[in-house]
Image 1: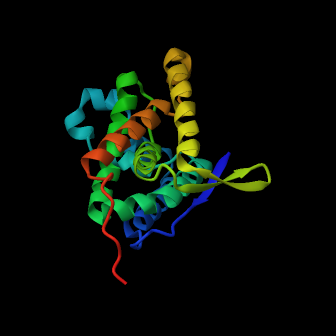
Image 2 (image 1 turned 45 degrees about the horizontal axis):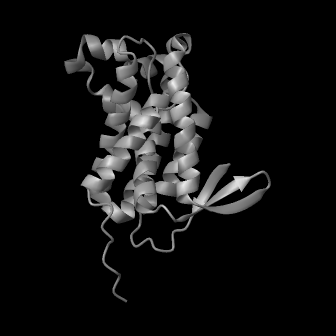
Length: 219
């Protein structure tokens, strides 16, 4: 089950911040390809390095959000941001959406960091921040139609079904990754960042007034 779109009929504003975030992520990834491993090591979030000198390494909390481990990693994240980010930005407004996105990303990073503060594996990716977007989307648009690819068919499903299954997968995988210490040390998908980001999206969605319906447009 792979989401490919959603219902944007109620969207009122152009999702400028979503577009800019996608552009920045793509630009940084191209820079990664050009600069190589040294660039990744310098700007990725590395838990052990942060533990040793957080006052200097704090900038990687933000820079790592815009880095990715490969084309598939980048493409999947940007697709999810494209599908779900515009509706959340529409509800929050541009500035609040940007602050929300960054806050969710920070929460996701610290959720993963708490699992293993001494890890030397570089953490990169917008997955945690985008998981926050998914949490807010589920909170605000639980019955919105999401188009998913099932085999060769496109099927419309309620958001709470699509995102609910995504959450279950992350929880199961996250528990497994914590139990499997060897896997954690070898790197891989940061499932706890996904869980932490999603939870932050739900909480921040409430705090930022996401449950309040916006006023109707005047024709």
